[in-house]
Image 1 (cartoon, one colour):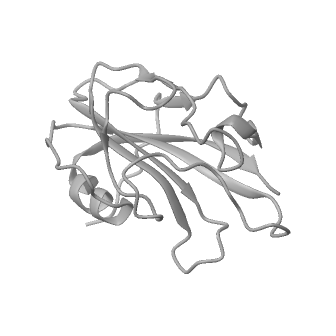
Image 2: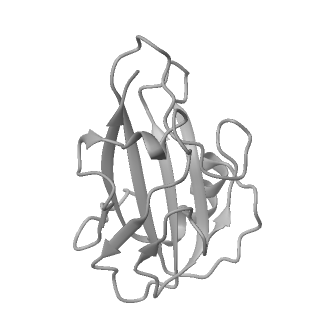
Amino acid sequence: MAQQLNVQDLAIRSGAFDGHEPIPERHTGDGEDVSPALEWSGVPDGTRSLAVVVYDPDAPLVDGFTHWVAYNIPGEASGLPEGGEGATPGANSFGNQRYDGPAPPPGHGRHHYYFWVYALDADLELEAGLDRRELLSRIEDHVIEQARTIGTYEH
């Protein structure tokens, strides 16, 4: 079966940074390492829950680097506050069940951090601790729509 593109009205943004602009140090490994507040709009009808993933494809690792996995967010939510309260934590590439902000290797250039939101047609009540690949495997058949914003950071 061919995969269907799910990009219509769903949008995600952060008041902490504009798309394709630097993420403030406060939200990085050099600062307080607290997740930025996120807002989304255009959530499609039938959304029962949402999930968020923050991923760095520029990391010098085969599969990039996952900074945050958060899910079981109620479908009526319009975002997550700074710190990510209101979501079940998954495991990031550090092995932590929390947000760990950008910390690219010194001299490695500007990295791009993809903040994805996924609108799901079911409340899957997933257990805590899923990593990015596990989460995506479990939600794949339930994604109604997805959207992203990108922040940058470099040392």
